[in-house]
Amino acid sequence: MLFWSSLRSRIFRRSFSISVSATTARLLLLLTLAVPALSAQNQQARHHRRIQRLPVTRFYDDPQPMPPGKPGGLIRVEPTDDYDLAADFSALRILYHSRDAGGRDVAVSAVVLVPDGRPPAGGWPVLAWAHGFSAAARQCAPSLLRNLYYGPLLSMYVHLGYAVVATDYAGLGTQSRSAVMDIPSNAADVVNSIPAARAAAPQVGARWIAIGSSLGANVAVGVAEMEGKLRDPNYLGSIAISGLVDAMSEDRSKDLPFRTFALLAYGIKTVYPDFDPNDMLAKDAVPAYQQVVDSCDSLSSSSQSAEIEMLNPKWRSNRFVEQFFTRNTLGETPAYGPLLVIADDQDPAVPSSLAAQVVARMCRQGDAVQFEMFSDPQPGLVLGDSVRDQMVWIQARLAGRPASKNCR
Image (cartoon, rainbow, N blue to C red; front, side):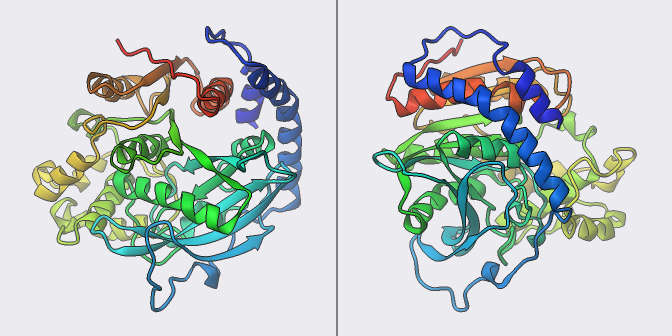
């Protein structure tokens, strides 16, 4: 309940300088009324259903053979009432076409949350949710959790009148290999989830915003950079919350657990099939590598002590590792549309200086970035503390107002 207690107590604490329209003011008033109810309802739901993880059903199986389809084409859809969310909504699971790093057709699963009631003209505006880290194994898909990993937050978005399209990313849920930690692959899955969701639910509108937290923050920026080529006129911008980082720096390596490196090796192998994880990991690490990639533990679940000995000393000089870091360096491809970047200067896991480095590069290439810094002493609180800023920014995009930027 830490997230929602923070949200209730701090949501209107920070002052802001932009003007608020009547629509936005009503939205923020609704937010103050909605949050306590969402918290209570979500707590009750957790008591009623103790089993949080759902089984991998045949719905997630890749079609054999895969039917032809363009990226974003809908493969199949099913309604579901499996999710414990504190809002009035209908939920659909979808399977859709996307493309992997090699351009091959892959099936990707997602959940579409649609508010109950009559949609506004043009349909419900869409928030395309880019989730944070959820491991690499098939059973670790967020859509296989009863709360969809970020249940209270997604509930709030739906409660406030947004359709939410939450992709699992390829290989989570479905049977292809997960491109864990690869921003371009995950961003493509977010982009392609939008037309598939519209095909599955006619109430879903055309206009959409990408939003992500933790590793999903990087994916949200990756969407903006991908849209620099696609130029979808209905894409209105991206929000990156607490997790935007530069490509892994050498001085951070010694502070990271082995699990991070094992999954990094797995993701590199997905993007570059000729890569051999044994060129990155020490011989003694191979059994632990397989155990890591088959589990759904968090990135920080293993000890950091003596982890670095499980890597080959020259692992960073491997050509596939270098290529992977290069393709995952943000701020070197112009973004399309404005961005809101939110960082926490108290988070030891993701130093705000790393977000600042990415933002500086984005600003130098002319991206429209609004960079907001929060000071939360406990990790995770920035998700709740920034809700008002998120909502004001989203409403401004939907109203067609110019985006503010504070690049220096």
